[in-house]
Amino acid sequence: MPCSLSRGRSLNCKDTIGGIEKVFFSTSDLGDLTIGSDDEVTDISGTGIVLFEYVVKGANGLETAVTSSPESGTTFFESTLTLQLPKTTKEDLKETKMLAFSRPKAFVLTRNGDLLLCGEKYGMELSSGGISSGQNFGDFNGINLTFTASEATPPRVVILSGATATDPFAGEAEITTTVGTNS
Image (cartoon, rainbow, N blue to C red; front, side):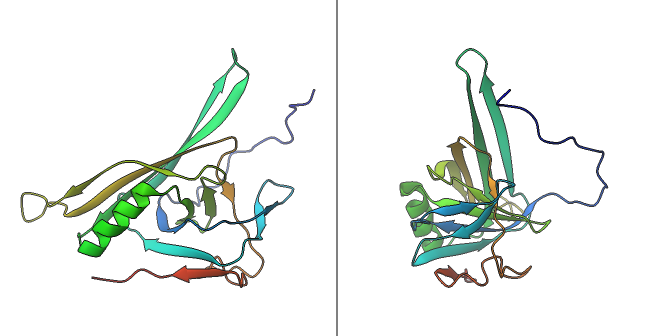
């Protein structure tokens, strides 16, 4: 049988937490990805790759839905990345427009230290969002964004040689990370 399983799964320890810490967006060509035996990305061959780092806190997350049709024999994975970016500046509004116009790839760093590549082949679409001033003193003032990506595979874990807990792209000479600024 060509679609046979390869392993079982036991009840895991309760040592994980939810949420994401950072998102790195890129519109650069990642080149050919080296995919390891466990379906993880182990090398990125592109040149001159620029990543834009977004540090997030609070109501941010990544969900991936599996859609499989027995009638058509198809399966795809739709990832939804939700971001809540407090405070609105003119620079943020410009970048929101650029995110909406492009189809960036997103590297999502979870609070557990996993780096996941979303939109590997087709990119992510900024499918909805909103800019809010709030009404009361304690209301949210900022930008809410929802990105979606439909792919043949779920987001891949990225494990690069030289990566560290503080820099998941360390050792990759062709990758430049542009850190966000406070405003």
